[in-house]
Length: 449
Image (cartoon, rainbow, N blue to C red; front, side, top):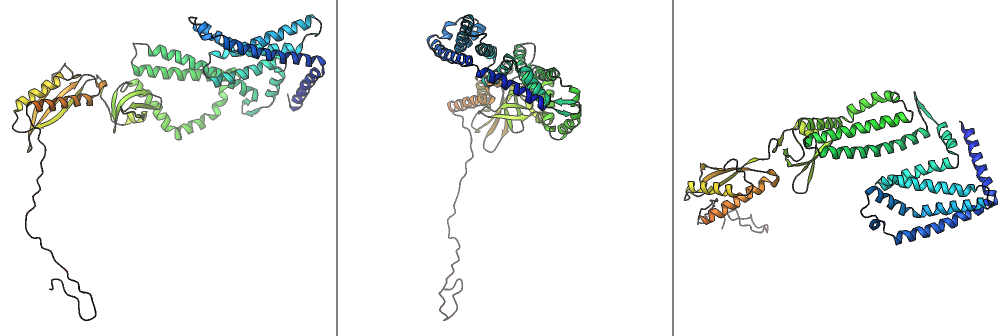
């Protein structure tokens, strides 16, 4: 179809509409439609205000509750369709109208809108619901008035050819609609599969994340391939752009690809996983999530540190919970020389043993490490049973216990003391005597009296 054919089709459509408008029965049907619309709006608002669907459907299955809520929201549309259809049937049976084309079209349009809104009620995104509803209703409206084929032919007549690839507005519209539906289905299927994988106890957290990402990527690729095939686009036509895409990946997206591959490696080798306590450079925290490009590390003070996956592969990483969640903690302290070192070690071991969250599989140990100028230095070591509570919290509790015990035992903790002595005596001070110059003689020299 060329532009002349398109213009002819539009002229025929306008002539058909003009013929309906010039008919005196058109205004009668149009008036009935306006009256039915007003009555339906009033009755629909009254029904929604009078009945609480949520309380009425309490205990019903979820699909039935959703259906009842949608029907109540579209009560005005249902009433309008019923009133218009009853009016058409009465007028046709009484011979006032031959077939009531305008009323029949209005009923069909209202019914199509009702069915579309019920079908899209399962979609949670309101914007997507509106876009899908309007697009579907436009197609249904063209089909009802018998102009769908003409519009499709007109949209298919305008094309852009690139090699073996032929793009038309009709192809783009079909691809967009099908791709939106496919992505919604992919999201729903991905969420279902993710829930099933997350509840599996036979898989480690890192393997779960890897499987979820692979499944989502596979679903997206399969959906795009199916949509392209459905609209008649040959995927081999895109082979022309593969070289340019490869060059772009090589130069502009190398970091993104590196982070993606690094993320797959991290998920596969299980070196880190969600929940691990890690130290990367100057950043320490617990891994809260692992994504395609980065991992999120919760620092414990409200910050979320986003570290690229490539850094975890190329840099030194300390994983405090790689094999287990226990950790050796060391507390250094000192006492004066008047204290008994045996008693000090005994107190330190007892305090560590009785502190909450200190591991019991290995006893704490206290060592005398140095005779320093200010006193004796000790090192208390113990194991933290679970790093989830924080090793700093356990260390603080042990040190507070040491302080209390030393107070009770009259054991002093040495601290440096500085004394400042000022020696008495006169300080040599040179005085400079300046005499104003009055051109009568030279000024006095330093030291002159």
